[in-house]
Amino acid sequence: MIEIKNLNKTYITKDASITALRDIDLTIRDGEIFGIIGLSGAGKSTLVRCINLLEKPSSGEVILDGQSLTELPQKELLKVRRRIGMIFQSFNLFEQRTVTQNVTYPLEIAGVKKKEAHKKAADLLELVGLSDRAGAYPSQLSGGQKQRVAIARALATDPKYLLCDEATSALDPNTTQSILHLLKEINQKLGVTIIVITHEMRVIDQICDRVAVIDQSRIAEVGNVSDVFTNPQSDIAKNLILPQSPLAQKKIGDRRVRIIFDGEESTRPVLADMILSCQVAVNIIFADTKDIDGKAYGHIIVQLPEEKNEADKIMAWLNASGMKFSEEAL
Image 1: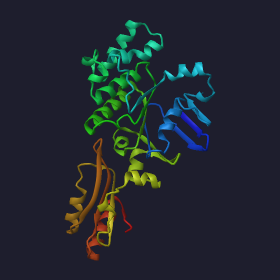
Image 2: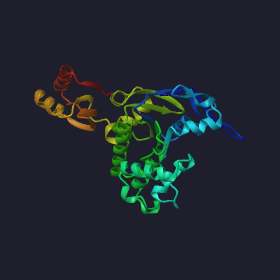
Image 3: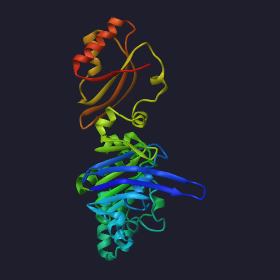
Image 4: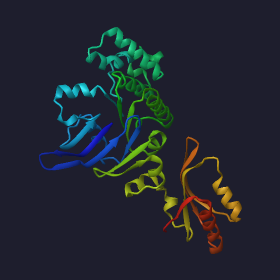
């Protein structure tokens, strides 16, 4: 388990001091995939680098399995860091080394015998689907393949924790999906606790169990992904999750309602049932729903009919249906 207690990070420059993190308190449980999301400059990358003390906090504690990292001497800290793997947006591979040599690098540093290191690299390359590229150089790989090599290298020392700092931001959507699938597979097969840093909600809702939303150096809210996604409490979470499209922000009609899906069966035809039951047509202004393990999560905004009686029919049906919804302020 990772515990972060009252963590602060301030950078002192010649002319000013800049606070990157303020009063951070988080607990990341063993075996979960934990997301940290925020806009650029919110402090999320500084936070992940403080977890393994690549950045030393100005104050506060980082406790790993009951051991305070902030109190360890450098030699002991280096040993503990072997339990924390890390992958980056830019891959950080050695261009003059082959795929296998990149993966074995942390094992060489740890003094592992060459034969053992190469066996470990071969096993990891099979895990990430790159056995056939073992002798290739980074320049011969696609972006997705480079990130798979980086993941294999991060797993070389059998870490208990894997930090992913914007690991999919440089990848196209299809490649992003494959990398997220791989990370989830690693979590399930190896039991590695994964911390995902991102500015994209689609990354969080696809693989994370819980999420912390960071804004202006502080934690704005923490919760299960399904709870935060369907009922965000903080302004920043609402901005990240709820629709910002021009159509959704336009004043269309006098009344509209947001229908919230927080675990409904994804095959349930909610809108069709509503329209057929009420015999009233509605206009869909915005929709963002996702199927997660056969359950529907997300939001649909519909414009209610101009006729008050028809609009009231819709509201009565929603009240009777058990669906979560809220009438939107215009």
